[in-house]
Image 1 (tube, helix red, strand yellow):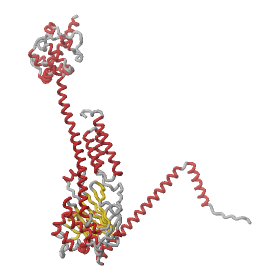
Image 2 (cartoon, rainbow over the protein chains, first blue to last red):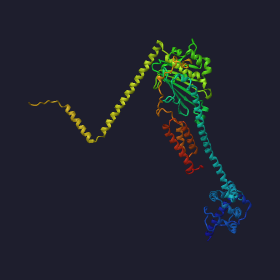
Image 3 (cartoon, rainbow over the protein chains, first blue to last red):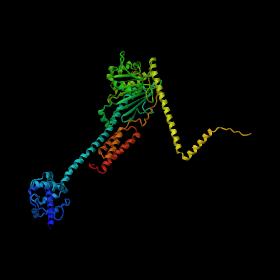
Image 4 (cartoon, rainbow over the protein chains, first blue to last red):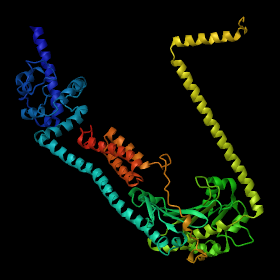
Length: 486
Length: 107
């Protein structure tokens, strides 16, 4: 009996101790105020299982027992019943319970030493717990309303991506149509200035346009920013192709990019010279930096020509320009007085030369057609198309000049030698390429044969081998001639 | 310089109608074409949008598809890649908006 009562006492001790911990967790503030033990029940029925710590069991503790048996009674300043009940109605009942086993060991010691003083360890959880306890009643609506503004804010935030991207797309579409129209207007204004009736190309070429018939369209639109113009029917040349590469005004992203990286509207002329019209001329003219680049990049300039230093004897092109040529003589012959006066001289270049980019004549042009004249100019804007009249006039002028030009004997000897070498090299390359192709074909054929041999079955291989052997033997045997007796 | 082309009198007329050759547009082989960067980027963004369920990526894919369409030169060659990029982008948008919610984020 004694043991039984002793164990029961221990039981009660433990349960009261747990209650004490729970309440100090839940309502340290209230603890100071209330100090009655009415709402305190002993766990007679169940064991001390934290998980099954029912509020029912805790609702009605026997007052007498708590007072008498347990020294921690005065300490167990448990809050009044309603608070207690509410505290345990929290959404997270597991929290105080989970804290309880942790705190049992430590707080037991604390409790031994400091009888009536608060436990510093438990302060933080206790502090937040009363706050939670305060929110106990408006618990249900609060998290919802707390979450709702978050949701609205979040959903509001999430629409920015759609709005930004959608508006960019709309702006892109609008810009496509306006940019397209702008480019078309620019091309048409150029054509109106230089390719329609009584214009320079009309006077120089008998056939204008990109179609077949008489009234073919003048311009060919290859992309929203690429336009082509073709003219044919003139002496010395087979035809002229002008390609206008305009800024990508139709593409919003390119337009933004071009705000950072500058870009120009360009027009480039390609004149296909007749074989008998052009002598061995390699010549280029461009602004200094561009000329250096050209000389390094282009095959024909690199191989045959070099930068020419301006001669002191005669008038020369403006300072910003530099000449690439095979010899000074040829360069001098191509840069005539008229040209210097009109476009490339010092004074003239300031006024008229701002749209000039480069000029390149070559009879060894890499590509399908060998003898070509290339001109590259920048396009002025729509309303100032006449500014480039002088530059465009260079084109027919040089067609005639180069068409009529004949090299002197010394110049010819130099150029002849260089070209001969180049022709030989080209021929050698062609030969080696042809040989390579032949070798490849042979190797392929051999591979095919090997494969077909391997495919043969073992029988066939044996048969073949025996045949081979028989043949060898026959060859090895001395040839005995036999004739008939009579 | 201007006198060469100015006269329409026979002496100085540079025109030779007999020598006129009609225009032949040179066919460009598919290898020579400049690389379609915007189409490629559109495919990359589209795939990323589908794989990672990232909305912004799908929208950017649509935008770059639009740029690729705008810069299309000839219909036959370029349309295949552009249509592939468009499919990826639209698929990305559909999975992002109509598919199951992305874990941890509000779709």
